Image (cartoon, rainbow, N blue to C red):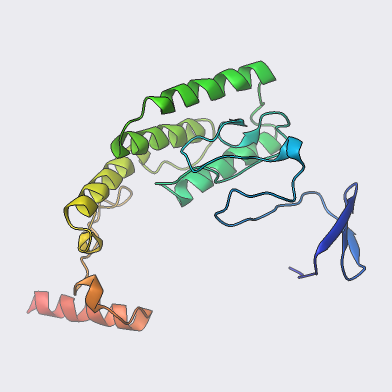
Length: 216
């Protein structure tokens, strides 16, 4: 990994930098954080969307419809976060490796419209979670992504939302059961507002003290 100054221009696959150096690359990945703002992209390639679960103009929520060689990852509003990013990345990988063949533009547009129409029918947070779980399942079914019980994780997210509604100051103290190991997570040993030291050493010490008390 090498850090270099600002990109000044592209000549084919050669990237030129502000310090006068240049190098050829196979791919360029642009990371923008959480803002849907791509001023460096030409209009014909720029995604313009609001925060939603299925941005328009993206096939499978990933591939830019007018030019599917352009990939947008993680543009959706998120409940599942990294599981969703991961599933998207695996799908893109298989497209790059020619394991998945993207359909023609008309078929891509029809698939997008199907998802957008279904999203229009979603009316509450539980519907949001089910919709995104279905979206992730659609991606993982097409690849060899490891099974992680996305629907059961959706049930946990629904309970988490319910816990937030019941007690916005206490829901962080709830424990949930892993969909992978069936292990119930340990509860916080103190109210989260009282845990001012978030270091690993302090947290492990609190857990140890709680365990000793339970054994006693």
